[in-house]
Image (cartoon, rainbow over all chains, first blue to last red; front, side, top):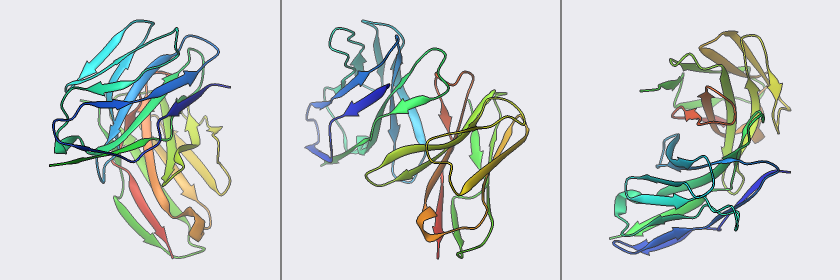
Length: 112
Length: 112
């Protein structure tokens, strides 16, 4: 079945470090791919998305490219801030499916 | 801006009580979802609804029921709360189920 695998956390980095959170997927069709972020004590917010192969989603300095050949959608940011500390979820949606499929989430902590 | 609101941010109930969690969205979305979030388990779908008075079981429906009498409102009901239902409950809505979901802030439920 359709599934999403994220790198296990927690991930701890220093401020201004480069961030990569890996996400790979298995899907029967051609999914849309999403990254959601959950700040402490809050619900999930859409961070970025891509709807077809080679699309790049970007927002708030974060980027992810939809790579069909490697079935991946890795999240990157060039210089993280303390305010980026949160849990990040990768997800996919298949046309005609009734729900999104979420990864397990990756907790990111940025130290000053 | 899409707004999804949940009736309570924090709730404390006793074992055996009937618990109602309410969710309201203001974007005329067809689809609404209830998830629970637990450490190490990510997001798990409890129930979803694709239209008024329609509902579908998600991955973990046992011990829960739902009600959708109006398009904007989706209620989660714990018929007889148990301690293993202590969790964070998240509501979401979307235009299409495989597309961007918009989340509420969550209700943290403690069952004693």
